[in-house]
Length: 397
Image 1: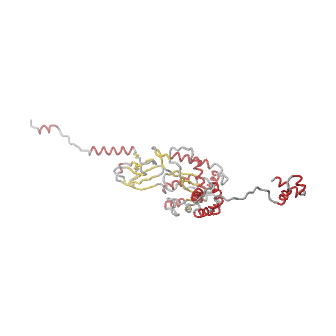
Image 2: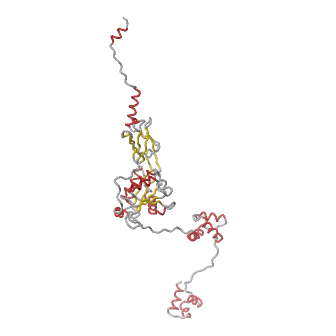
């Protein structure tokens, strides 16, 4: 390369003859003439030889057209059955160039959000079960959200994918953000919009808050890509080496982690989400004095064995209300019951997410034992006390 460049410089710049260049460089005159005539630097070339992959190129193209998502390993297995004996690297290099031609990837536009415009919601499933006490663990989900403009986020741990739990998670996330966006974004979650249309509980929740909704197309997670990236960060940064003792511990750790990461500079927006959230709250509508009620409510009649079963657990009821109807209210933290005809409290228990347990209020047990003792003693009977001289008169001396 250096000699080729020097020969061309001597000839075209200094104007030296081929004879003089040959004398100075010691190179053959034919070599000098080729260097002067060649506009490209010399390269080592050898005759191309056939590749072991050549007989199978058409079959590889056919497989890619038939199934664009087929893996390199599967393609190699199929062509090996037809006689391919080449290495894996040759096939991978060929597919790396062929896939973009036969199976072009989807492209995306950059989305710009206005402050307070959108808030994306989704479900994140922890990779481990959550300890719920009594030596048990339970599968959980996290209702997550992220604002489009500030990229501030929040999360709420729940233990079912039913509408009351997901709506409670949304309510908690909105309270953490401190304002109401114009539109909430969900995919086609079963309790939210299983067929692209909002369920009545979800529509009622949004109507009570006067926010709009946007239901995404099926199998389109890229439409909420900001939140998907947060999920990946939770998987790699929040979960590892973080022992959890209880649902309350998990929620406290998640809240602290969310606040910490929102104080970092976000690479996508090149700003600190916590600082942008302060500005975005000024463009968001304030939260109502009371968020929509998401508790479960139903009426039952107190059985002779005064217990209420919920989520495989039995909770005691006041036995004095046996046979009467009570309204049961199930929240994320408490289970309570109120007598419908008098408004008296029939039960109040801390909700447990462990299963197949019995919880008895000591006051209910004491009332039950008192009622049982009354039944054993029977009714009070007044007995006439007669003077003894009456008996003497009846017995002859």
